[in-house]
Length: 412
Ligand code: NDP
Picture 1 (cartoon, rainbow, N blue to C red):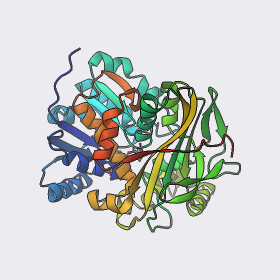
Picture 2: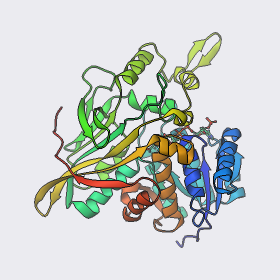
Picture 3: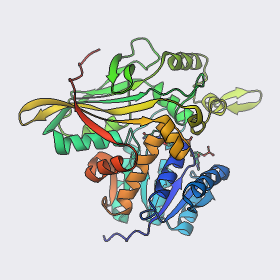
């Protein structure tokens, strides 16, 4: 099926920290993104992004109010604005509704987080992979996970497979936020999604099976000290992260795949207490004649992630340590990016976690918009050619480096 030529029209759904960065980045590339709309539930947040973009770049973007859980509402907005691409930067709960609207209107789809049902703290790709045939038949493309992790970490792996290794056998993704936001407790992206992710049972891939270990706030959780470039040694905790699911299928020869994230003792203590008193529960409880979901109430009390930037200092260091074979020899390489919270704030008005997600979201959209990635169906990002994505990271604010490294031990 011949795909239509793109007209430079993008609709961003959501108006949180990540959407703000992506909208800024799209506005900085007017040749590719000629018409930008930010549509979300709370119109005032869309307007704030619009005003900031007009002030900084003199560009006018459009805004709209939309409930992304309502497919007919989405369809009618898409028909009105006629985007080439919908960039989903709302929450994982909306993924399937937005994919349905893209199918109904024949528009390409990109996101940064896989689907999660609201009433189950569980995420996996199966729900979105099930759209593959329908996207193919309709002649439209979906790129799943175009943030940093998932996103850049998948592309780093694909790049390693294409240019560095004959075969990658051991993959460790290490995500370090060495920044400080000055609040006693806050999460760097949506608190509900973040807390659901970090309180679950941990899994990593080993010789063809998923191995379970305790959650990061329970006894027996696995952690070790990794010496990060620029920011030094930090305690890093084994965590299950969604990119592992697709990487172990798409990267041939993987024997072990793990994901690590740094947490401070302060963060873990707060989280332990919140969990122990029931504040992280996702089911409804009765309170003074009302039904409330504790984690949603907690979200309302915590600082908005997009508001953290103003006081945030320090850096993030995120990347992959990969061990594998090249010409019969075993080699280990570390590919990583360092991002500075204050610089991210200066450029886009938000902190580095939103920045490191919003920039790759724009890059994914740019590669689809310009036809570099142009294949009907549903793809995880490591299935697509990594070269122009890697170049664009250097151009658009997330430069990376490849260095020699020692292999990481098997057990800690
Ligand atoms: P925020 O909570 O700051 O923003 C989410 C936005 O989506 C809000 O503007 C919210 O509206 C809007 N929204 C929620 N529900 C609806 C709905 N039904 N209809 C329309 N709009 C809706 O989140 P972040 O910006 O921090 O994160 C955005 C996404 O990025 C999340 O999916 C997150 O999981 C993902 N992410 C991915 C990362 C990666 O590296 N891959 C890293 C960090 C985040 P309202 O303002 O009204 O609440």
